Image (cartoon, rainbow, N blue to C red):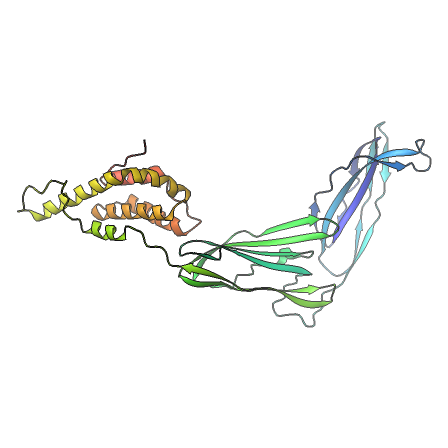
Length: 357
């Protein structure tokens, strides 16, 4: 229910205030922004006014009212104090209001009824309708009506998908017009774990409609999203070959074959240094996209660079950095490491990176 007091004041009224704040016993109230002060308008003067035509400014006080119990509820106020420009103060009464609140019927209540009063409209919006594995689906469930929609709980709380679901804090919006409008919004970020057809389930909400005096159910249809397999990196073969380094014609051969273990160690170290030098300009250009999440493919290349370097030289700090970098590719709540952290880790593990000129 919308409670509204329209105040018309003459030019000679300097200040308006409540004698006492209006009392709303057994009624939950939400203060709404009143209408902006409208331009002064001409109106006929009242009895005893010397000027037959007076100018008025109109403003409004508004509250959204939600009764908390049935019965007869009174809204009373001691009125307004109007201070005139000459210092005089006038009392202006505000008429009382009595609400008659009817109880919600007990008979025929649905098992999942939570006390929500309608009428209302429920909608589900999902985007995109197709994506690659590891990407995020954005789900929005909105409910619009004029009742106690803040009592609506998480509508997808019982959903147990093969996905990681991150629920955001629900929002409540109140809008005043000719009638009060309430909107409750739920948003979810969903990351599927498997490829294939992923289904967002239908949403259902039972409510009581006082206009029709019966219980109704608002529903939204299920939505299907096509999840394609994660694209394979173009250099997957190169990664396997890197784990088993081949002879490099530009790398000096081992001084002696009598100590093969030492020769192999030099070859691996030389291969890592050569690869990092060749990839240096790429690292400089990839670190920024990783920090902003612009390129999943580039993120994969940096992951493989750190993983390969760690295989040759274990490092606890670099291993933790690699874990965070991998998680940030698929978890929207994980922040990707900064560029300088990646460069320091690669340099510490035996190579240096060249930035862009």
